[in-house]
Length: 147
Image (cartoon, rainbow, N blue to C red; front, side, top):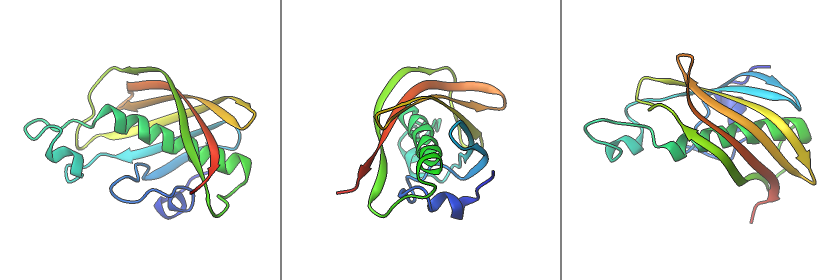
């Protein structure tokens, strides 16, 4: 199942400049998602990180992976977000940064469900550019009523 940016916006509350998923290429409900983030030079973080050699901050790569987990969990659990419900990142384990991500790169994010226990989802995630893994992590998230 593919999702364009309009579909993605129906599942994530994030908006520019913090919406970090541009497209979903594959989604298997309850199992996995493959999403895409196009990294562009005009994104605000590159004015300071770093002006002479722009590099996507690692925390933003992890956030992009977390946003992909939110889409997968919502699609798997309730089909569509209920008003006032969001997915919150509650844990990050085994994070590794292997390569840099620069403007012009396409960040491919692959997520697999590991477990779901008492409303806590655990995911195995990796992000790659041109077939090379740039970041890997295990993330946990849970559904929460927005304040």
